[in-house]
Length: 412
Ligand code: LLP
Image (cartoon, rainbow, N blue to C red; front, side):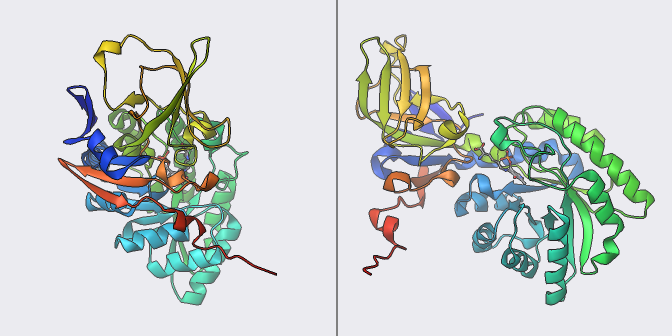
């Protein structure tokens, strides 16, 4: 059940009228529903309840401290990809024993930081990285739990930019190489190589790619078991997007009896539908042939998914006007950035709006704010959390000063 709904033709998030937020916080602004986050977490954990997996929210999808905190309060762990994310999640006092760390290019400093924090698992993506972790673990006098991220050579997911598990992709280690590393694990005395990880891509709506990857992994684990190697963790990454129940029904039978703790790394699943981006209509240009451009005050720097992946996001008016509901001219919704790629919708039939109206870009809670930039020297938007009939500023809008804070004028 969505927590963004019309009541008497006004869009609400939980018990708060969105227009009220727009008027008090300004636009562009991201708005998140507390209840949606909690509901999505529960939906997933209930679907997988029989295995009690560790659900590690993929921080890259939405790294706002409050959002991460809401999920960890529900019991979530965290999937991180950088020292910066580790720094963030330390600020919310996340339990290190529920943190997993993936990433194809971890620096020595990041590895050191992760080891010192005593996180649950570092998922290594190459043999050299395994060697590097072993070296640093030795220096720090630690024994470090490590998973191998395998590349199962499987396609899945939406845009090719977000597929990650074909052998052409930079991610992970082939199954054969992974097996070799497991077999020579004595060469890495400071590691406990005890997990297998994969991540197939993003926006995967069916369970088939997971089933195919799991079959490959299960065959590997059987071979390992014959060699006396037992896995503690099976981390099947994120990327799934759809019915948690269907996903769980397809996956659970394959995993039961494996004896390893299941780890999931959902990003989009937990946060996408929990957030919207709100923008204000600045201008409306109508071409003689009837085509319309609605220019809004949010740009590709505020939300890049349509520009970058040609992603479809529903766009709806904050105030619905039933009397004009049948008139829907062909429309592009575009931003103020100096690029033709700066659009939120192309050639869509959208209702009539006027200058000053607010529009909501739906399903913007994952990879929305997280991928903002200052392109065109545009300050980043604010973020608001709604809980029942109250709303809270969880990230201030940037101001011009923020744009130049770290710059120096050199007069040589
Ligand atoms: N685990 C790993 C190792 C990942 O690389 C990712 C996402 C996830 C989990 C979470 O995937 P999710 O459940 O959110 O699909 N910027 C793109 C998505 C890139 C995803 C990168 N890795 C987008 O806006 O669609």
